[in-house]
Image (cartoon, rainbow, N blue to C red; front, side):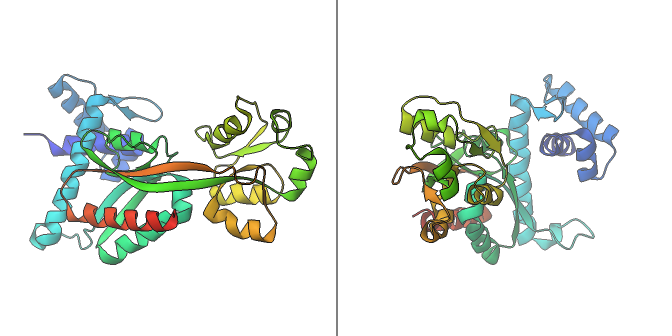
Length: 298
């Protein structure tokens, strides 16, 4: 029989990134967390946590994290059906569903899904942000039960559902276009004009440049890790960048932003991957996500 106090400690350290923050989350001392992790590692004869800044899970640790998250969800679901199982003194025992989402989905259509879900399910959502190429790693590690991802191939133990394509346009202010692209959008002009990137994982601008120029181009780069700030920077003429089409429409109509190359859209297919755990709350969330995505990305 597994020691679920030790499993909870492993999951908390991975989720929080350190033994100290895990201890605060579990309301125990850091030494208690360390002892629980050590005991489980000794019992299994395997390292489960890679100590560092932040702490991360080994392959074995990730499998245990996934297991404890799923068991926790099942227990919360059961306590909802049988209130007598709730811990003494706990009035609010709503299920928390942890998911990983890319920032552009969160700022365009995912809130609609969350609103639909929370309106009909007595549950909470815990959203982690990452690039659509990397959200699947949160699912593999067991830190989340579902993710919006660019990967169609399902993670082991998960289902994958196509959501649609999120379309991006390469946009800039008229002032920046006049300054850098009066002779057209070429490898030479792109090498001089500053572009905007969300973070080091953001490859959209580089992908668009490769499609237009058919080769790699080194571009001067501003880094802005916030979707609204990203759009505002385009409007202010700081640089050009890839903006979700749904966020760009009004700016294109007003003329405050223009396409660098009209009609040259970059579309990113997105998928909803979720654990195959048969829990009604996951079914409710999946239906809400599919509905909102296929409306918002149409």
